[in-house]
Image (cartoon, rainbow, N blue to C red; front, side):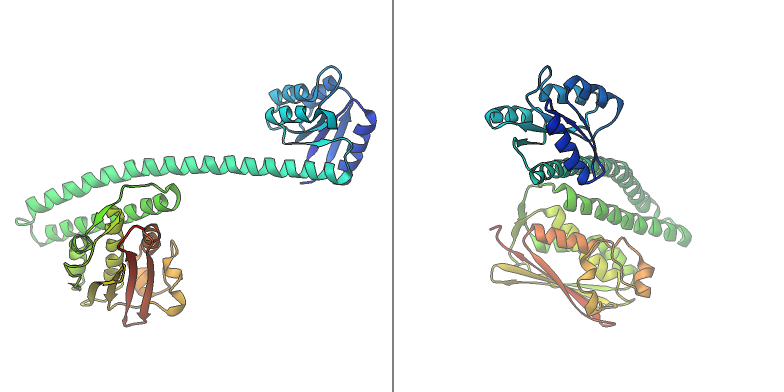
Length: 364
């Protein structure tokens, strides 16, 4: 990008003059010297983004000049100028950290192209370093959150269960209401935290967990059990029609269960008091077809795609009332893509939605 400061060093005053003129025409700020020691002294007094230097110079050669300046200014990048007979030395220069080289005689286009390409490469390298630093910060954050949130929350939930079992029979109505709130909201918080961590894990960390034979009937039962109390609070009936004969498949059990819980959680949250959720599964060739049908508020056709993007909530009074992170369906899509599956929705506003996914019974 024009505006960068460039230092040109060559024992041929004519080469220096030509390089300065060419690069200044491109908008760079350029200074030229004919001696290596002068180049190093000048670089110590002022910052330069790039050194363009002849590789063969009396006294200090181009590589030695470059290394000396980089000791004080590691951000400096360089291009070497070499004659046809000394191309082998250009290879040494690249090993020393130079971003490119040009050979004598060179044209205006060759010089300016080499300079712009080197600066662009350096910019991309810095961005890559920054992204890697961000990746590490994100991974460190997730590891910290995983420990600092999941561990104490597990203890809270376990303690709540103990108190619930010890006090429920003896508790009065007020105490029972308090215990029910603790248990319900603790479970909801656990699912929210699990979804947040899983989304970043699936999207960015790409952790490879071992795959095992999945019994989707069994995982469906476990998902229903996990949300039976939430359904009961809204007097919602869950009709689990998944047959015992549904075939298994190889997958990551923790993710498949989380996916089923997310689908069922949505079907309950966005359903009406006294509604119904029906779960079906069947085999279609080498695919398992799985359906979660509810009698809730439905989804407008123009929102079919949007609901599968992260942090999306539909602008509906019921949606705003139930809240949530808007990550459940985005996580489910990531999980299905990981298992080579597909997901879509069929819905009628005010009458309900049917979320459908297919997943291969083989890992091929």
